[in-house]
Length: 311
Image (cartoon, rainbow, N blue to C red; front, top):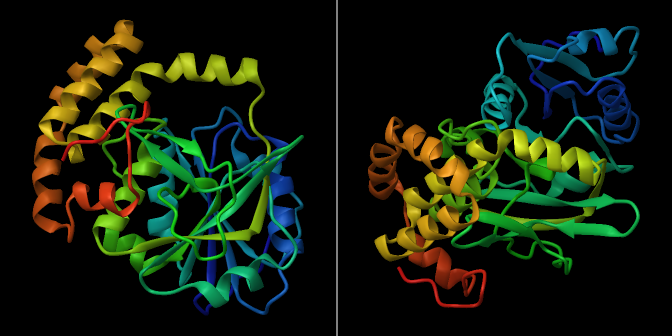
């Protein structure tokens, strides 16, 4: 793997990984071979208790970037794994991505001129045969996201930054407090972080030319995976809403989840009642520059069936 470099890297690429096997090796090669600037680059991999440690798939890998692996002995989930990697990263700029992507040629030269102290950049995600999207939009009261089917212009504001193609200053990530560590396994962490960034006074802007080819799970794999994690996803969506929504919208959200996922509500609500969600809500209300109604007005946000969202 890459040689040690005592100077601080300019860019840290942060990748959570669980049972990625050979795909992560291909990802690292694409990161390294498609760079074109002289910027020092490190790659931080967080191995989330993979059945076979990721180091075994990186044997004899020869690339210029320094690679470090942080292994969790117990399952942490995607949001916590991303935090572990980002807080360990030494680079001035963080590129947060996945273990099953291909970076474009000259990717480092694409992003570096646009990095600013209070700016998060969002790249495009491309997948065969015809999928291409840059950023997401928030869906209320589901509190999830839909992809932006129409590509935004360069540096156009974007509601939500997907973690597979997120670029921001290391200091901004830390100032925002990283992803919400109360989110379990998967789901809602990306839109919650994005909403919090906007409400803290940062911007999320599109960089559509930064295109990452992404290997999504096929339909059966996706369904199996979601079924295994549905309770955590219900918990996360409700937690997100409880942090920001008005009382009226919270009731809408609870009704939505109770109707859509009745078999998961009791356990999800028990997890929430045992959590810090209300203290966290109070903390955010005290510390953020704007309230959620500002975000609603900023993006002329309607709910998922086109109704007004009440602040």
